[in-house]
Image (cartoon, rainbow, N blue to C red; front, side, top):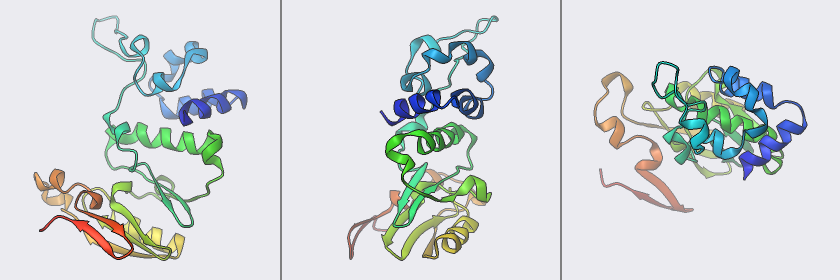
Length: 202
């Protein structure tokens, strides 16, 4: 619903073409002639007409690529006491998710009222929402190493004037199966009350 609302508002403002060219630069030239049929299901890869498109040489060539990352709704944005943190994954297969998240926060009526207090892409750092847990009005717990940069934690602390406690996650320079098993901080630790946490036993 938010995505459809954002599309409608961008269309009315005459900014949809520019936004789509930014989100889908490779597909935009072919999408341009179908602008009036772009909907939320199309952008989410749920439209057979737009997905099952074949190149002249016969291979599948979707007009809009689908992404399994859309299921992870916590990763592209985080709500803090001061406003929204827009994240930025180090993995290219998640780029569309972050671009679409920015689009929704820019154009959807329900979200434009929330201030963006930190934009990881603009700051040149990588971080994902699953690594960011808001402890209280002054404190953020943040997993660093696997999906989020230590520099992101430092910049968030400075920008939001909050304490950011870095929690070491599996390092990417010694990549192993553990990097998938302990992907984000929220996969091993979550606050369930002010002074109660749920965590794995190791």
